[in-house]
Length: 193
Image (cartoon, rainbow, N blue to C red; front, side):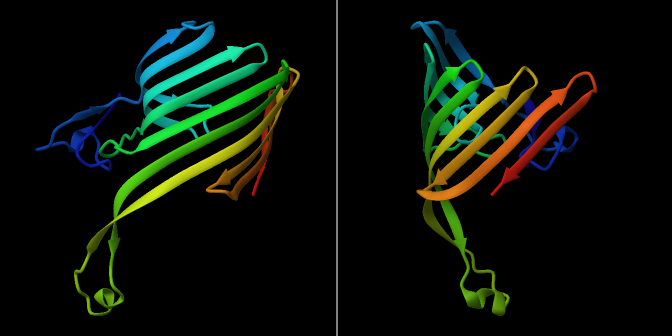
């Protein structure tokens, strides 16, 4: 658990006159093998399979069938530093493992966020006026990611990911990680665009 005061910049020693609040990083109930090789979680949890590492207050379900893995989640985005989000966040994905060392995956994610953006007219700064105007706005996130992972032996792995954000190319990443155990050498080489 993370303890904090009303400000995310203060520590526990700076809580004079304020309340100490608990913000759990993970707090969920989990059931395994409810429907074959499956997992069901309800509560605050990190979704590792998504396009990004999502902290979600909601429900997650995954199922493995032979060489295939399926997952889906729904809820609201979790936060540690402010009020909880009220807007929905959903995601799903499918992965295929043709061999024990190869994984090909497609992941999707959709989220909305209602917020108030501060709009300042050009003349407010010119004349030193305090003129903030809160304007409601909505931000949408729609992502699709294609991922390939190839393990080479027990100590080496190649990784490639291509991500679309709202239909436009957003990220391309190649990485190689691993270790040479006899020489005590670990490496992580990556290229991102």
